[in-house]
Image 1 (tube, rainbow, N blue to C red):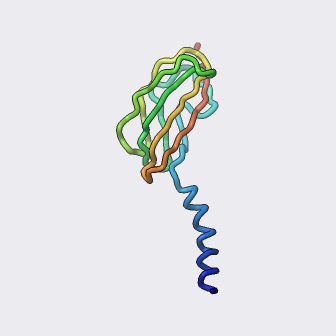
Image 2: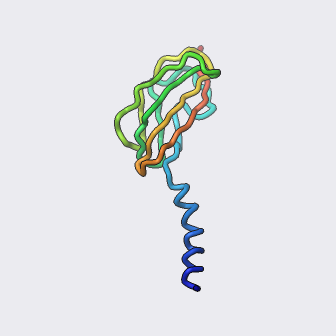
Image 3: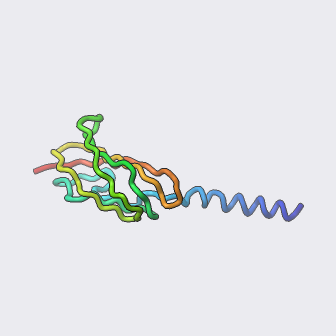
Length: 116
């Protein structure tokens, strides 16, 4: 009986760590909620572990003028993607990927292109 209690207690401490072990976005260019003078030449997504992007798009806030972006066909932690040219506006970059441990990860990055 004592063995089972110890096993359950150990499992309770290990399971939350496993749940948090999936890939997540660490940094990006453009950064979340940033303002950039012009759209950078490339979008950079730094993940906590190797991830293969399966979908990538950018649109004006409010769901207008969506542009799909070709996602690279490689599984790496640092993703670099050629960026589309954007007019000054508030934009949403939406991404979806498959982490190296086969878990679906997704997110949206809001940023503003200020223009000159």
